[in-house]
Image (spheres, rainbow, N blue to C red):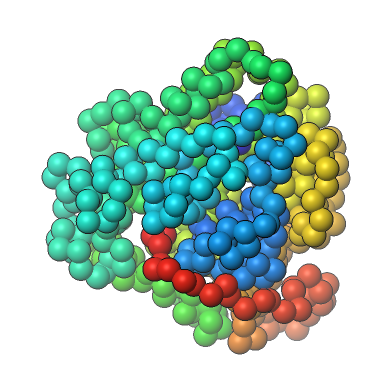
Length: 461
């Protein structure tokens, strides 16, 4: 299971950006089934990962943001790796799998979920020390040379991570590279009688956008195609939608006013390219090892990322740019190589899918459904739209053709993706759309549970 952070649909096989080259993600898609209409349960790291790895929606757990520590709130809850471990699998995890990791203001209690953890990919991607006071920034920090970042002022909202630039290091010496080498080494070793569950969490393309220099050189600054933007895109949003778009507006304005937009596009694409190379290293190791023919490979991102759409430079929204992610499952003997499905599916469905594929006992009260029927026949229609939640009471439903957003205050948005893939025209108040809303509305939850009470200081994004 390969987990990437903050990667939107700017990958080759999804066609999200015309210049993005991801030969290894594309290669994995050719190996199995690519879900072209896949979406997250939450557009934030912690609640998205909790929902995916426990199979329970944020509105059921109360995990809505990055502050709540799910395994402290629900110490007995079954997670995907712990379920595999309890049923005879050798489970190994490295990098960022859960949001709260050992050494990250949390005790090293991953033994509950994984037999062994390699955690350095997170820390060495950013700093050498384990605490904020011990940051060892790259020489010349900030690499983007923004005075606001150097002075740790606001904006940017989080100057500790708002940086980008090339490193003169080989792939394997970056934090993510070290973790991938650890995982690749495991994949090439002789098999034992015990089946394995290996989770490799790649931190890129999360901020700061650091990658080896050759990946920046793939995208010369000044020649990068920006995403399609609309100057009056916010005019037809309800008040809650405007508020959502204004989060991190200071970061967006800082980039635009300082003339760094092309740099940001370059750095994000470079980080995706570096991530793709690391995925290729994992696939090469699997193919060179003894388990290539009977190992399921899964790739997913915890959410997307805005790069100016809706005048927003971050995640934390219920629009397509935040919810739409790459999601691939290659299951030998089940998936047809190079198959695609445009039906709406959610990461909430991953847990029950892997349970069925690996013939494990069912876990009660999971919110997702198994995707094994779609893996066998990608033409099968989905039985429901995908639900995404951002904070209590704010929800989005994504069907095959529509996105329907309803905010806690009753504000609504509706977009027809057949004619409006950029979600520029809100049809929620159009009388002709009443039938679409009526058909989708029953899939909104009746009520969300209150947020889990936070006992400790907020964590990083």
